Length: 216
Image (cartoon, rainbow, N blue to C red):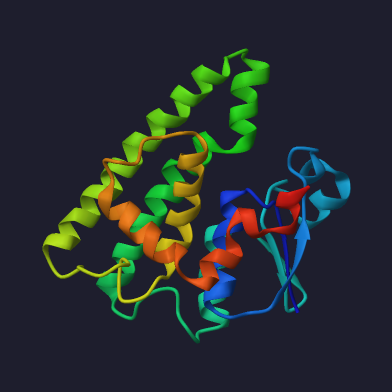
């Protein structure tokens, strides 16, 4: 049995839920309330010394860090791969996914936003400007890469023939962008992929609004 510790609105937890669904793997969902600080408790830190989500337990081992978990899932469960077969295609998927994961998650995660607002005294409007500034920087680059592919051979609804590694990372970030009222009208390739993914049951089931904690 796979056990996923996560938070319903966490982009990193959302990534792993999508991946598990795309691979059609059953898992037990174990909520961690980030707003209540459960991730900082002694018991949870024993599971994950990084004090964050997600954590995936499998084969008697506890694993943290969402991008490493995605790679592990692809190696441990090679059926329905998240990464494409060719080395250059795998690089493209990683390049775009890592741009989002490394350039956006760090400055935009909950702990940073709370620090900006509560410790440094910034207003919510100022926090929003911070959020939009980093989104614009990185999503503009991702959109440009997608436009290059669109003008070549990448003309489908997804980055490749089916959703995978990139979509696992992109969809949660676009969800967050919409939460913070970021204007996505200038990102037609990203929003095309987003719309196609949201039509699929694997993405619908992983969506934050579909999690039991969302109704609490």
